[in-house]
Amino acid sequence: MKVLENKRLGVVGIIVENRESVPAMNRILSDHAEIIVGRMGLPYREREVSVLALIVDGSTDEIGAMTGKLGKLQGVKVKSALASK
Image (cartoon, rainbow, N blue to C red; front, side, top):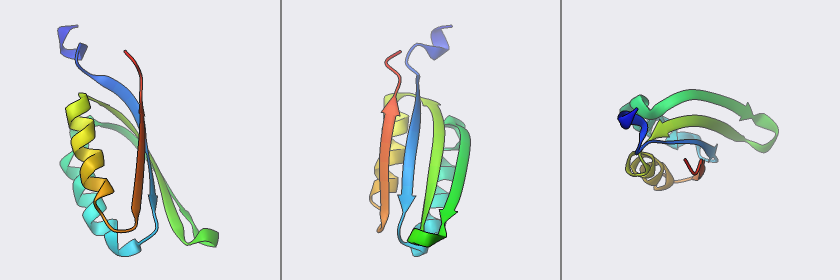
């Protein structure tokens, strides 16, 4: 199980307020597909936003690289929570 030693399981929440950022966001998610275990996205039309939840399994560097790129997109808010083990 040495492969799992430096990996962390976590959840990444994403709120998209600017639809123009969606293509760039999807490219970033595709580039990091190897750490994404699952993805759920819902449009919240009443508030004119989209909400995504990702289950991720990767190193803190991998997860941080993905969330950092996402957070630089205009109108995209990102928060993550990682398991301690």
